Image (tube, rainbow, N blue to C red; front, side, top):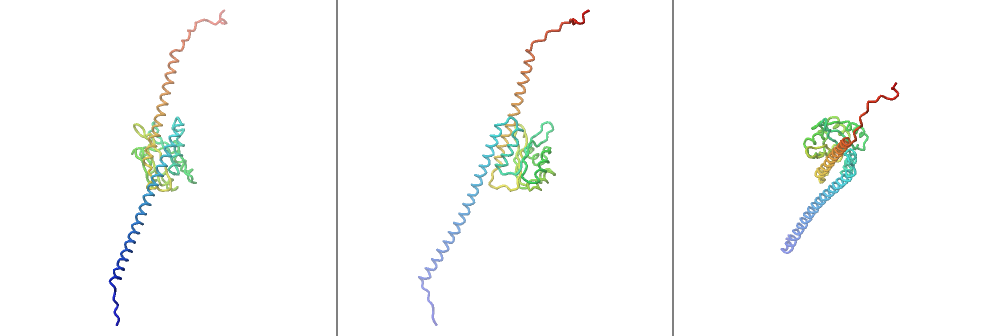
Length: 256
């Protein structure tokens, strides 16, 4: 019967080799984990950068559009175009408060590029929202930026159904800020959900402030020119030469 003897040297070498292999596996695992974390951080950084670029593009485009207009109705469509192109939205609506009846009216609407868009556009343009009604009404009352990936359920019934039928479920709405109270709301919809890294809320606040400042400035300027015109008319009436009194003379043809 043969007996196999194991050399202590060989045994120690095998143990060391196994230990080294184990360390290499651990290093590979740690390296893979570090690489995965780096890729995640890199994606987040690019997401933040893309969001910043979109925000800058939107703010710059809107400021340029406002600078070339005197009243908001001249530039409302351009504002919606800039927002949709910068933040990749399919449709948007510009709601403005009617101070006489205290309701929100759609002064501009950018339709989505779909077959059902014409029905949605007709419904939106004819809509009048009471405050706290629909997405725009809620945003007006709460004075906060509203962002949701499933929003039509909180919209008004008919408009919400049209949005859902067209798969426009991702919504961002923000108030147009005024000195004392909001002046209106801008509401945007799209199909794709938001990128978690896309910072849109801060940009929406800035844009809402700038559009609101433009509206208030244009209103103040209109009042100023109206007052100046009234003063000028009053001055012309005051300094106009008085008409000479008509003499009570019988026309010659009536004299006998």
